[in-house]
Image 1 (cartoon, rainbow, N blue to C red):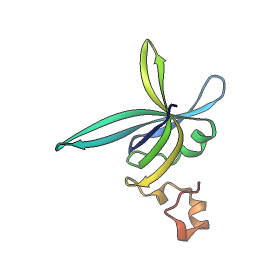
Image 2: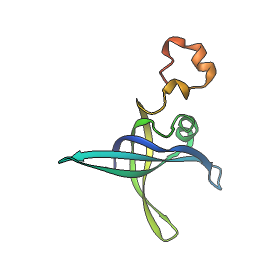
Image 3: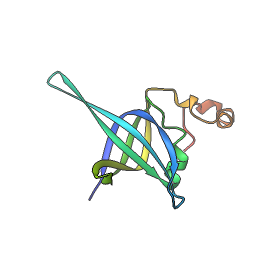
Length: 121
């Protein structure tokens, strides 16, 4: 079984792109930090979402957001290099960074003013 869970801060806004065959995908980076024996280490993860997941979430994943990512670890070949990539299946927003309400579309904020900090999915 290939399953990965990461909790960290988005290092680069999600960027929606389209393949030559017309499939939408989105990429972003995620920083995870660990503290051990008084030392802090940060690891960077390259993340990729596909299809409807990418289309729906790209507008909400912004630099500084604290998120949980669930997906699969894949090794992608790019110009004779192998790049470890997390193929994202699910994202959960945990807070931190920009306020969630600032990312939600304006009309949805007006429709649900009592839940302005909740994302519409």
